[in-house]
Image (cartoon, rainbow, N blue to C red; front, side):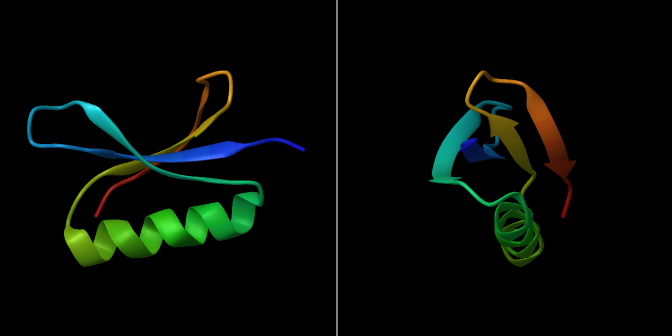
Length: 57
């Protein structure tokens, strides 16, 4: 099973770890909701560090 890591971008442009999930649809939904609520960029990366998706607020 593939791990998906949700990260958010701080004011300095660094990516901070938020959580790890296994289901891509729920990980995307979580990142999208948090991006709109907190007005921050979120991204989904896999366990190897490859970018899956980038979500803007």
